[in-house]
Image (cartoon, rainbow, N blue to C red; front, side, top):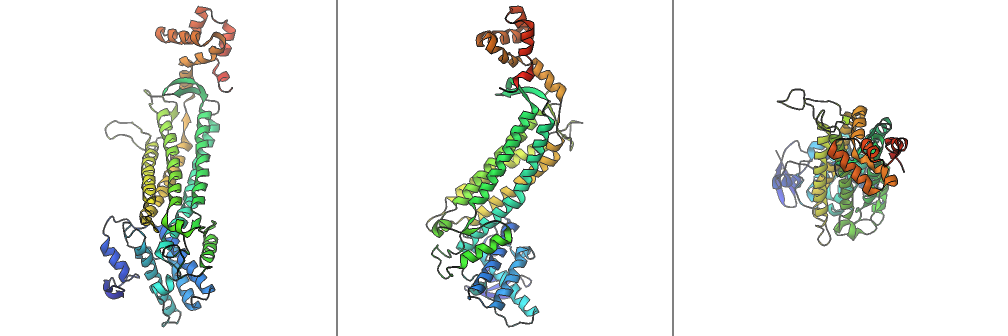
Length: 459
């Protein structure tokens, strides 16, 4: 251990730690969950500190040598080189001050080491005066929240959703000629093709990708430059613009300074919006997975219209049983993600006066949503959807036995007569064709044309 000092006095800190006394206090104060802030969030925080150092140097507020050392150390943080130096629990001070202080201390100490290695052992780098120059936890942490989640949406979730969209589109094309019984209220309905059903699933993914873009857009405004309460006290008027430009260049996403810093720090509406969009995507994935699970039920005593890839044994007691495990994984992630969305939206309400005080929790929840949705979408696409097969014979048999083909006779014989035909066919076990001919309602050729399911697939 070594002795470090902060504004509250002396503190014993592990000798190999880059962080200092204030971080150690937070480690001792918050032994809550064992969950740390997610790595993408820490990487974004490193990028912000690097951009801030460079902006302050350009504005003449930071000596070039200090700015260079701080920027180098901050980039190491952004690259994940010091991930083990961020031990503070998610459930800490609601502004994330402990994590901002953690970053300031790590970067300052590492910058001093880098300066020493470069032949400048006397270079002074202070966590607050230099690394945190022109910033407050109250604008830096929400900035890291927006930047990190937007990047994760773009780099992680969007490609996974695109992969699933492509797999569903491919299955829609492969199943284009497989006619099956449609079902509404889980009851027999008029025919559709399996391809039409999967085109609907693919369309849901296309909309999910559009929602993902809207979620990124909701996070483009950054709080940086507002400092403590949104007034910008102790920062340069051009500081935020310069930081936003550098963050945009680093990430490939367009970020800009918040139009109103009091909204940007007192509220978290952008995060609530992103959570809602992600919750909708979670629901879409769950609906698709639940449908595929149901269509593949059986193999003999269920619907059995789809054959799902067999990827693992399904039972410890029933030999040969195979279960729709990836579908069930998607459904569970859907529940989890929607619960996290409620957490974010509830937390977004806690913006009393000039600051929301649930920032670390929102960072944890949003990143967990993105991570799990991206992983399960990719696994579902590769391990289930890509290998789906349609049981065309089973689908054809179900269509031929469906009483709802009678719907096509309504324009000719009327609704009431068609209903009577369906009821008689069901009660007697006869076919629709037999009942209609016996009643003399249509001639044989017209009846065969009307009952051809291929004629029922479009207007």
